[in-house]
Image 1 (cartoon, rainbow, N blue to C red):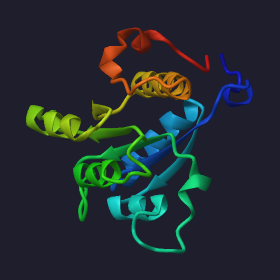
Image 2 (image 1 turned 45 degrees about the horizontal axis):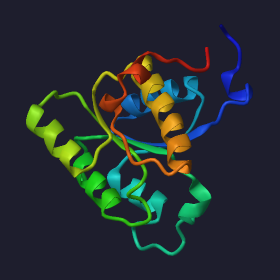
Image 3 (image 1 turned 60 degrees about the horizontal axis):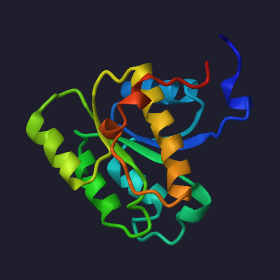
Image 4 (image 1 turned 45 degrees about the vertical axis):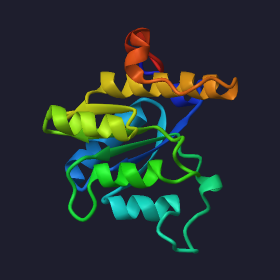
Length: 169
């Protein structure tokens, strides 16, 4: 307990966190940092697209330099919803392989199904807990290893054992 997990040699994930609520953004950022993730937090779907270089702005940082491993986005945001952001990401040949997790304070089955059908990796009901984040980061780390070996994309619920593994303890 108390050891600095990020200096233990574990692979650090880069997560793009998108939420219009300052408080929710700070909470998810803190949970991700506790889980040994590098976090870039933005306040809107448009800012996320800009960061990812999908806004047509030639001055955006090159995606190859970003190395984003996971995108976590709120569903309900003004301007561009998390669902619309998901569609943009999955519609990009450059970005479609990045797992996208949708977060919402509303547990609506139709919304969840719609996001999963569009390619979301997971749908989390807020408040997001540390156990949710650890499960995601463990899954993504194993997914990166599997992808390097040529494995196909898996969904979180396909690997229930991943729900019980912990890292950085």
